[in-house]
Amino acid sequence: MQDFTEGKIAKQLLLFSVPMLIGNLFQQLYTLVDMVIVGRFVSGDALAAVGVSMSVVMFIVSTLIGLTTGASVAISQFLGAKDHEKLKKTVSVSIIALLWVSLALTVLGIVFAPALLRLLNTNEDIFDDALVYLRILMAGMVFPVFYNMYTAYMRALGDSRRPLYFLILATLLNVALDLFFVIVLDMRVAGAALATIIAQAVAMALCFVYAMRREPLLRVTKLSYDGALLRLILKYGTPAALQYSFVSLAQLVITRLINSFGSATMAGITAATRIDQFAMAPILNLSAALSTFVAQNMGAGIEERARKGFRVTICYMLVCTVIVSSVILVFYDQLISIFVDNADSNKLVIITAGGEYLRIMAVFYFLFVFLFSFNGFFRGVGDAVIAMVFPIISLVARTLSAYGFVWFAGMGPEALAWSIPIGWGLSGFASWIYYKKRLWVGKVATVNTVQ
Image 1: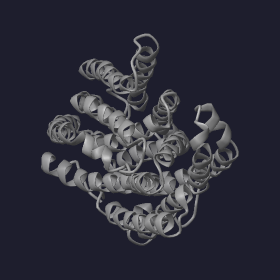
Image 2: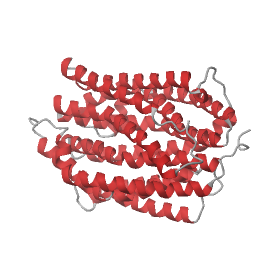
Image 3: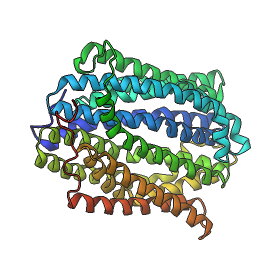
Image 4: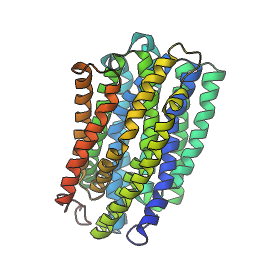
């Protein structure tokens, strides 16, 4: 457990966010390894199938992860206010809610998987592989949901290292199982999906055992329900869930547009978006670290310290962005080539589509910095609604721009990349105005908020 209400801000944020960043990068390896192995040892079509399926999975899982985000904000604020009783009850209530909702969504996801893939205009040459991969991941959805829950709660208490250790072990297991199932047993996309599920289950189990044995504030021996705390979780979590759902929904709409350009282009964009997620990971993790820092300080009534942490975080984000953008602008084609077998007849199309996407995106990452620095601050002060609204505005602008560029300007797959900075810029500017006018004041939960 780490107290952010005192000490050197720059050092605290750096030491807290670095393990989170490393952990996020390893978590990205779950799907990245699947895609590299599938792309190089199965086919480009199989890579496209994994990309389509993952967009559906993220749409379904995002709702549940949003609830954990809301609960983690409440946990951080109760920690700052030294109200450990409500903190532990919050953990119990969230476990009950997540379990029931995740089981319901698992069943619905498996049953309606074919309809979802057809709604996305999935090409027939990749449909069967996409369906197999999707159904296996949906069957094990509870594992990543509860892993994300425990890691979010550990970070809310100031512990970003333990989740990293568990994730590294699970990722190494995922790599080994991927190689065994896909290459040795020739299980194709089914093997890649199964490897991911097993690794996620191990990560969840490690987090659970640690929480029960070593973290008293997260130890739940008897589940109990509290309506007021559930309402608080929903107050913070529903906007986050809606935001993540809109993010995933926008990705689904974009996926449908990508599918119209053919499977090879879909494979290229799938590879590019995985690298893009690696590139944005430092920003997202610093944003999450800022939320925890701000939540604790606002819960303790120290606004100026929270705002100073916000300024320090922006500086860190910009430094990371300059480094990442420079690497991508130099090596974008080589990065996409990692996913492609040299013998693949569609190699040139895949590399061209993915490389152009990355080259455009790398120039505009600084706009993403400003949007998600504000987002992390707003979430930390408890203004969950506005933390949802601005990213949604960004996504709507992105989606409309992408379709507009394709339908009216006659652009090709590059329209997908050009549309994203438009959304970032509009929402970042709106966030700045909201911050300067101090419309976020008074949103933090106090000890007396929940009785």
